[in-house]
Image (spheres, one colour):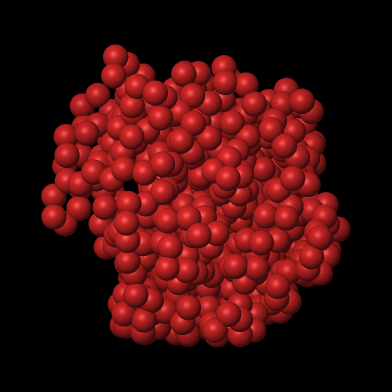
Length: 551
């Protein structure tokens, strides 16, 4: 390939969709990915004896890639939000919130390699949080502007979803019909109906029937460990494969980007990365950063233009600010019936009743509820032995036979509003292997977030009881442990350069050949929606806007 016209840094939901849209239109694109490629049939371990004892097979470990500042002290008034297990006791025994993980994947396809496949559109009401409720920031366009790109992204991923769109109006149906609910999810549905709550099929990037030369899902329940059958629509199998097939896109795995090189004319000249054969420099007309809302601001902060120490594209001073994380809760207990709850899609059903920003009484910002048995890692006998069944010997074996497949879990994800105490900066002390400062995570959950989390926890407990679970055995959430999967906001999108990092087409207000195409640009998180589909839709829109300016 000759010198690329566009360099894309990162290959997750945003980078992959952006690269495909350009390559499909004849633009020469190079994707630089810090991690390796994955071969689903060889690298995912679901056919081995140790499958349950290892989560996603990290080729590049995520532990230690970022640091964190001290988190907030835990208070007695939120004691009902502490994480615990009936055998192991309290999960966090200190008086301060602990760092568990920033869960992401370094590899071609990014975190779509281990996501559960949930693919949601934003609630239109959640895109106007500032004008309606005085919090966060408004999106610089409305839902209708993004809707055609949602349709396009759903087609590429192969989304299976319900016929009822709810408040998310649609110009076309989902490409595939919704999955039938597992028996365990049907039980949760019974509990919801007793409480007057809705319960419907979720929209997921797992095939309900053969599509695009991929097989339908076999309902093993292990999406988070990687899908060896290729029925889950991760970015590597969809957008990236299609981009490469055009002949206009090359993927360079193992390319650890060190910095962007700005020029004197408010344009980026080149990118420098470390690969298998030392450091290399790549020039291009345009550059898109899609490393996620933690690593994207880190790269830009480490790429300050001459005479500045504030970072690249930080004219507003908001680079790394407005960091928003995953607000999560899960409750689990044993159902008296044999549910076979280790089988089925991890999140095949959903309740949107409290998704709107004003749906929870006394709280600004919504939430959604869905099954969490698989995400609680209750899909195999090892975790039952450790966390569900007590004792030892013959009685333990007998209890295992009686109780395996009975665990029922429901969880919720809620809005996370920006807070001045939550942001990403550079660690002044810790450096990576190339002597560059690591990203440092600052996180604080304000009372509004914790009231929302308490509502989610109480509702989960009520649903479990109504579904026939007599006693809860385990609960966990983000009050006492930072364990985020969805991250947002550190390169906020907006029309005003003083209050945002990029414009409404995801381009830097100053550096006109620099774009950000990941969830860093989100002005708000939505009420628990999984962000992958919106990230891809935004990236498709940004690509089309860029092509218009390129002529």
